[in-house]
Image 1 (cartoon, rainbow, N blue to C red):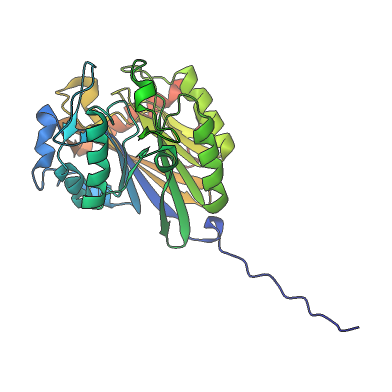
Image 2 (cartoon, rainbow, N blue to C red):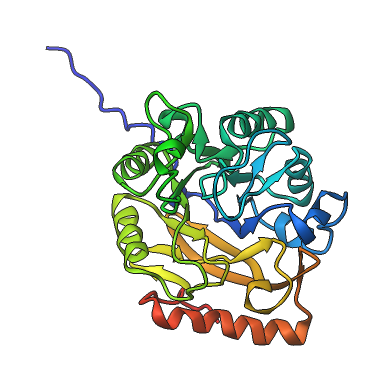
Length: 326
């Protein structure tokens, strides 16, 4: 009987075996009112070094990318020309999500124009598509061997518009998390082929600075399905962030490029996470202030105060600080 020699299997490196990567996140972006200044080249120069200081940077695109279409029957509707995506790329943003309650503000034409702008500018836009399969397709990037997958979805849509706005097997629209079944399946699928899985959500209640029960439930379900990082926005206010078990959750990134004038809605910042394996090992919040629609890093003295205020928001979340974080 011939003898056989055992051969050790070739192991594919996993994120746990590779060096750490950095992810950065900002909140809501549009180009209406004061925020129209973002369309000017160089308008984001003050915040650009912060945005570029990460391997992958992401924001919430809270606007349709179109100059056409008919406005939806709702109180606020936003649209911007494709140059907005170009300006974001120039500033260091790598991917945006359009899964929010403004992604289809200008109807089917606006949706198709947004998808066309993605192709024309080269800015990846997730959470939107010609059907649900496309809307739930993650952005993927490999950073120094670490395979990252990022999904976008919205838990917030006007009740009267949800049916028309939701992507289905046969209908273009947004990735909806009002029923999280499909999102959870997408997370599990991404988990099977990725080292780090991120979900960016539109969720919460406007102007409320503590997470709602629905947010807590969805965060727990997503982390249980395999998400390593869950972040989001919608409240136009900053909310708390920290560890939920082994995963990292940020309940509210606030406004970022937005027409807000002053007050709490003008408090913003960039969340930078260092991820090693599947674990966030460092969190860093760069406080910023929106002026003229544009975020600018806070001055050194003001940054310390704003940073302490941001950490204090964790108090009503049941989340835990990253070990060793300030």
